[in-house]
Image (cartoon, rainbow over all chains, first blue to last red; front, side, top):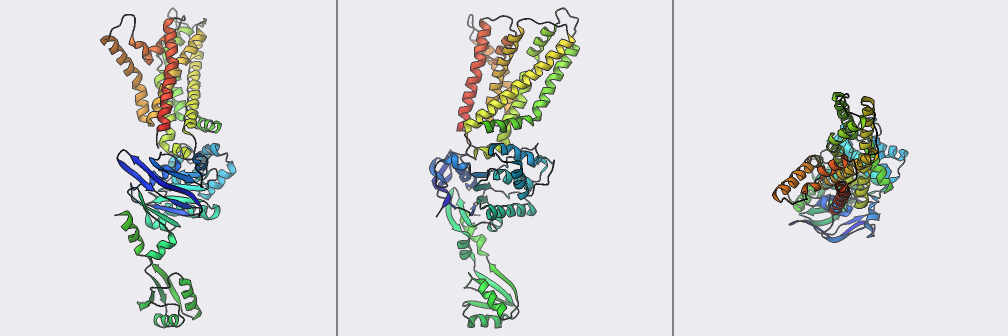
Length: 297
Length: 240
């Protein structure tokens, strides 16, 4: 497996507090790694250790398999705590200032601003931007110099629903279109769940678990609910075709307790048999509990 | 390093505080000149220019833009953005030091230039061979103050603290030295020679080169080298 970021027994001690305790993190190329933990769990500390903003008390970090960290860090864009914005400058001027460090052309700056939907802010200075706009400008700044990895610390914290959606869409777009690997920390589970491919769960400085989104889904999905026009007859048809096994019919719906990995096969069979399918949904009520059990209330 | 310097200079050009403080300095000088009596015997352009330079509080005023400029990156998060890209802390530190020094000296020369033009217009023109050494010694003295302000701002990383300390420290240090002189009176030696204010006042009162000027000159170079060295060590050990 190719890891773009890997930590081995990474630890950081502040006076008496162990903020990161033997963290062994593995981030795959092209993934969106959601780093989950309560406030003060050690998420920012680990991110800062990766970026070299803090010195580790023990352990090591490798980036792209190399331990020439400063060279490799040039390929990482980051947004840690504050977006690094000069308030008296416009979005373009902010980008232009940082662009000096990365030999970025004005054309590329305009493209990045378009990507984060800040290309039409004109002469409005960044100090007058909404929190969401500032975050997106921070992401655009972190995108300068064509980074391969983006490390974003709580990028959706304090944003309104529209702002959250804009940041989320930007992340998905960058991951899909530019193949950028993301390490994103948040304590907003629902939001993170919409974009992440992998999770790392941290509590009191200890990385408790690393799990892919698919594995997590498998563990958390308790049933699939299929709402059809004649559930009793439909379930008999599915049984006859060996498409389902453990199930029940109630409230005009079929609840499937196995064969949950491939609901599309079941939908296809129902549609072919001329049943009207109104709704297919996974019951993931266990998802939140899964994290809460681990990160603590 | 070149890119970092350009990054810092780009920031300086947009720093409003520099222009505001430059305006304040020049306005102070013009007001001072307008109320001064040009008919007083010995009120020449040179004397007026020298006396204003000595009492203009230019060092106090320049503490504001230097502190704001140095602390800006740390306070807005730009420092983390840049250092997170693997940029060396030493390079970043010296890029900031060089750019703030250039800006500081530009500020001082611009203020002095405007003041000089005004003094020539208002007062009887006079020039002697102390003028050029006087300007150079003033620059050396202010180089020392820049080192002090830059070091305080780099170590604290906070605007408010930096400006307050920069305002108070030279006076507090002078008081301490005077207290030492009082408690430990030594014949032929005064602790006050180590205070920043005393060094600058000796340099700006230059008429002929003497032992006091040599001592002030050496200290005004030794202080910033030591202070900037200490600030660098603190900065590279600092964690964000």
